[in-house]
Image (cartoon, rainbow over all chains, first blue to last red; front, side):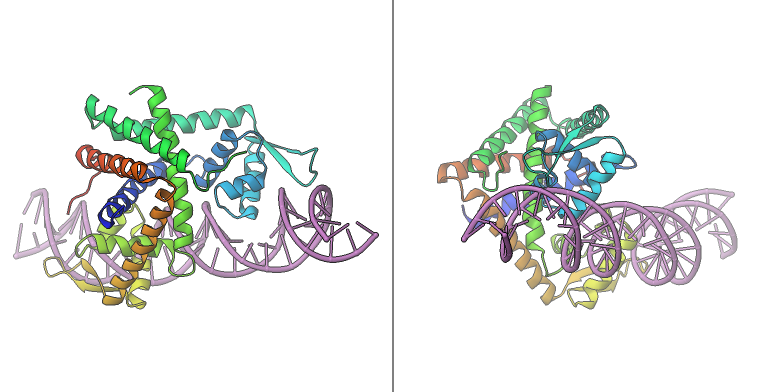
Length: 149
Length: 149
DNA sequence: CTAAAAGGTGGCTTTTGTCCACTATTTAAT
DNA sequence: ATTAAATAGTGGACAAAAGCCACCTTTTAG
């Protein structure tokens, strides 16, 4: 992997994350905050995770996560139960309301993706998807820092 | 583009941006702040941009950008000159020190990219690069919200 | 059976970002 | 030409996001 290739990847990272970031900003406007959304989706993604799992997965401070979960709990999006194997740990699950919110967030996210690929013709869209799919597989394969449960 | 494909892209976005985000967090630790780094790199990327250009590109409030630039100026990373065509506008350029810092940031960034692809063998690395390259071209082509100077 | 480690919470601070008001120019409209 | 509206930038005041540290509880290790 030579410098020019690295440079291309860096360019992509900058461009792509910036575009997604701006889109997501608008998505999460006036509903729940970005952090709340991320944590909610992470809970949905994993099965009964502990707060510490969330905080390590998203690389957020555990006290911050604690506070966010407290809010999500007050909003009745998340339930906390004490683990039976380890009475220090809490297990997190989404309520029905929480699941609805996650579904909405995913829908929004999908719309934003559409708004990106809509500018491409069918063939290009297919190419776009194929490239993403390839990257996904490579990330999973080589996945350093890849966390299993 | 069907639902399953969109789902794959959403998965990639989540996974990839999360990984990059965590890496960048560590990069910017204890040197300059994330916002400062982003703005510095944006100035380096564009040629003599105005603050308002930066704030629209990065979707940040103009007063916030103003403050950050003030700090970057105090740190002697950025110089501000008044445009001759429009005396309201300031043109931003990096100082020699500022350029050094940007170079460091890019180097760090490149190392992080290496840390991702290093887990792949040569053939896979090439595939990785090709996919990114393809996406770059597609983003530029279909580029909604793509800003020219 | 004690010491260290890990999960979680709350107080406090810093960083980040928003909103608004204000100055100085520039552009548009009459 | 003169005025009104729009644009670039700044600063004050404040809200939200995120981080650090000290602490309590439970679990694990020696």
